[in-house]
Image (tube, rainbow, N blue to C red; front, side, top):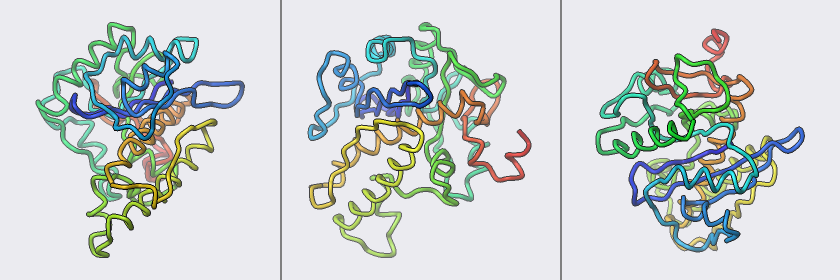
Amino acid sequence: MLGIDAAWTAHQPSGIALVQRQGDAWSCVALAPSYASFMALADGIAVDWSARAQGSKPQMTALLRAAEQLSDGRVDLIAFDMPLSKEPIGHRRQADRAVSRVFGNRGCAVHSPTLQRPGAIADGIRQDLEVCGYGLQTAADQPGPGGVIEVYPHVALLALLERKYRVPYKVSRSLQYWRTEHLSAEERIGRLLTEFGRIRDGLAQHIQAINLPLPQPAEVQALSALKPLEDCLDALVCAWVAIEHLQGRTRGLGDPSAAIWCPTAAFPEELAQQG
């Protein structure tokens, strides 16, 4: 199972998590803050968590080859945190509207994709994966292995951590989360790391062997240093949703062109019962 927190531009890095069933449990066999560092893991080069993660154009064939080498088998399902569609993406989709309608009052509305972001990157990823045998699963499809699903970590975390409102863990939004408290950068780093720890602990209930070192607040020199950790957590959340998807515990919101798959446990009770 591959979880990818895909950047909407080529110059930003993307978090990658590879999880594999081992007996009755799931384990994380590879975790990296960029496409390049993930592929380097397949060559036996460990992730340097102190280095700045570099963005690059996604090369899906090479990424899947690295994943197969790391897991000794074909990837069953790929979960992307990125707008994906069977049609060119240039505007707000039915999937975006549906998720915002259901979860917007819990702080989990969806950003609108455009022709520029992610635009051609998303279209290229979907096309490349289709050539590799991974078709996009939409609201017209039955959940199952062998394809690609789009997920949204903010909604997934409502279910994973049993929260009533959006989890405040995004580095770029730390000023907005606690704007009335006028926190220093050091204080915001501390709060973000607290949320990171809660997310990692929640994931550890479902995925073993998560090798994601979280520093102490005093060891972090700048907020930007937390971004690779955030990206890897998002990739792990994507992988967890993929696990839920295979167990039939997700629902796809959207239409036959695109869907965002959300854990059933995240839905309000009256909607969850509708199946």
